[in-house]
Every structure is written in structure tokens, then in C-alpha cells.
Length: 228
Image 1 (cartoon, rainbow, N blue to C red):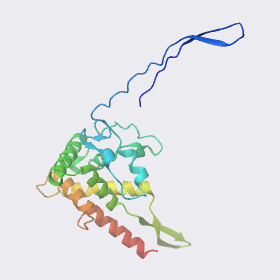
Image 2: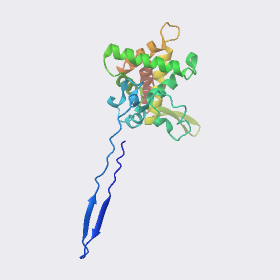
Image 3: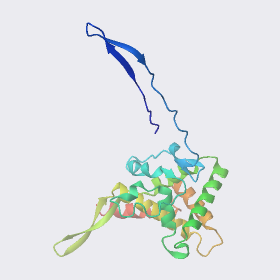
Image 4: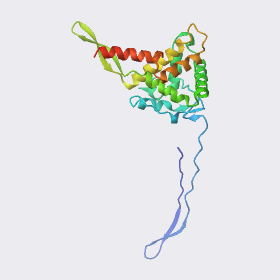
């Protein structure tokens, strides 16, 4: 945001009848707008413009749009950890990276996971020619479940009941399942983490049931439909 500083000085005097006569006047001084710095703002890894991304799911769109803002590298150092619903202000790419290093052999290796995601985005762009952030957003949309089940206790009987998932939880589950599917593709395989991310995001963006995240969504929604 550019600020406009103005200076306006007026010299005046009054004549015998009391009317004001302006003697001199200085025009406002304007400061030119600052140009944006490359890599700061909505550029993911300094390459991909997140402002072009469109979320086709109106339910999770308000929770995704604040997370598309990037400031340099996807690492905030836990700035929003103790804030109420602070994860809403966290970028979706950093949340995906944090889920990649949740457990297993990638635990604690954030730089490695970030490099793998950047490599995956580069290869997706080289193969398809489109913005990889849009494919990432399509994968999140396809992997977010709309309803789940909970246990309702009536007297001594506990039975499952279908409930609608909140938008925040839908986004959490989608990112978690995409990360688990990407990491599990490298188990007992020669695939790198970047290969697993490309495979999972590509399948999920197309709604393929062979994707781990999409398969989990269909399973959860099928169980919820039977518990209505």
C-alpha cells in the first residue's frame, strides 16, 4: 500500500471589508508508489503466482484464500501456533509441508520436504504447462470430505450418526491425506518424495479413486451415507 503525503500551505490576509485574499499557495507534493519486490507477496517459491488460483469449492474457499498469501520461503517459524484459529493465516503450501514431515522417515526434515515440493511443482509445470498451484488447489478440493460420522449415545446404546464437516476440518483432512498419500508412495519403492507428491496430486486433481486422499474421502462419505 502506497501512502500519499501532502503539503498544503496557504498565505492569506484580510482586506478592510473582511474578505480573505490568498497571497500564495503551494501545490501538494506526491510521493511515487513503491514497486513490489519480486518473490514477496503471492509468489509461491518466488515462481508461481497464487493470485491466479481459483477454488471451485465455495465451502473451503474463504479458508484457502488467506492461506495463498506467501512471504518469501514457506516457513513462518510457528508464528501462528498459539493464535486462535491462527492456521487460517498460514499458507496452504507450508501446512502441506508440515504434514509431510509429520512422522516417519521425513520427520523434522522441513527443508527436504520444501525442496521436494518445489521440485514437484517445477516438474508439473514442465509436463502440463499450467500453474502447479491450480493443480494443488484442485487436489485439495477433490480430497476434502463433505460429511463424516460421529458416535451418539442414547441411554446405553451408542450408534454412529452422519454429520456435516466444518470447512476448517475439511481443509485439514484434505492436506493430511494428500501428505500421507505422497509419503506412502515412497515406502518400499525407489520413488523420491517429489515423485510421490506428483503422483498423488495428479491423481487427486483428476478425482481418481486410486489416489489415497480421494479414496479416503469416498470411504468416509460412504460410511456417513449409511449412518444417516
